Length: 469
Image 1 (cartoon, rainbow, N blue to C red):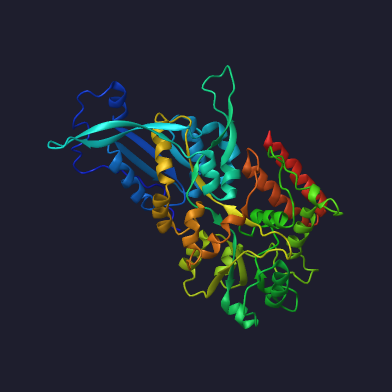
Image 2: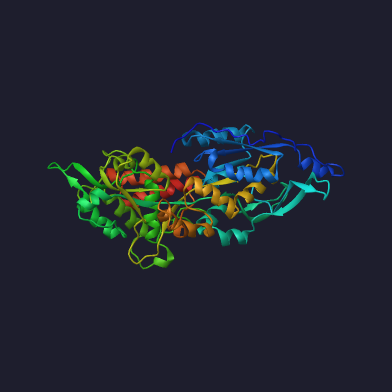
């Protein structure tokens, strides 16, 4: 997906005849203030403004006194630029955060209020029609509605118990919605049809046992044991796209509880429901993953000398690639003739289905001067008919359950959408980057032979615990 440093949108009518005009006689000071011109700055990182243009225009038809300035930043610069702008009081009113950034941004975002007050432009009169302003109080999305209408993973990530007291001398803890997701991406299995056909494999694997067997057939070594063709870029840390997500979902599929109710990592433990096991399920999952990078194992198919797993798949050097829906456009742009398919993430035989979520959602800055407008717009954006307009442009799975049904048979997003309701994630503390680094180093220490699986996991837990406080 092409990245641009910024996209600036000014949604202003060429002739702003209604701005500050119309019938204002008899309006209260509160209504006049609410109908004053206001600029709302929105920062994004994944999509260009065309993804939101229709929704922004729909909203401005109701609120023509508002102008939205949308800026898209490159992924690699986004968070640093955002944190600097927020610290210097020049940040956006509305911005995107990743689903594992919630803890890090709790102090910087404003939870949804129970209701908002915003000005609407309305037409009054019968014979002589005039435009005037009306101040409306509108209820936000209730907690019950959010839980009923959104995928479970979003509820866990986005609904938090926070202090909403307007004063510092007392506390008032309530469960609130922190932001609005439009889409939820899921991890799936891309496969090279030509390589599977050549190996006599008519379908991709549905289980990890099948994945093991297919990788054995697809891996080719020379006389010295060097890899000529790999079944998958799988088993290492730094040259596998989203390696932490892969290891996390393997652990969770195997019954691991990644963290407790307050976010402390617990994946080194045996869950109470699996008390009869000798070892924590995370140990088995990590061993399974790293065996694919162990030359002594039958499943050996990858090592640190290989390129990035996405690059290798695009070059036709691997049969399988684990990625999200956003990878599809990247693959097609770089290798338009590659004969690929997409299938569901493999599962463990007999275990509950678990998939992995990776997504961004909109939040409102605690420093915004227009919190009611910002949250009112997010509630408007969350309406099914408005969210659908965005999804039709971005081509990603819906966060709203009502919109998923229409996507299941879609050739491009169907597989990813079918996994949203069974997708999971886990809280990585107030420094998710440090937590991810700890997980990557956990994997690498096993590959290097510098730690056992149990020691590597316990060391990673200790590191992540330091980010929770």
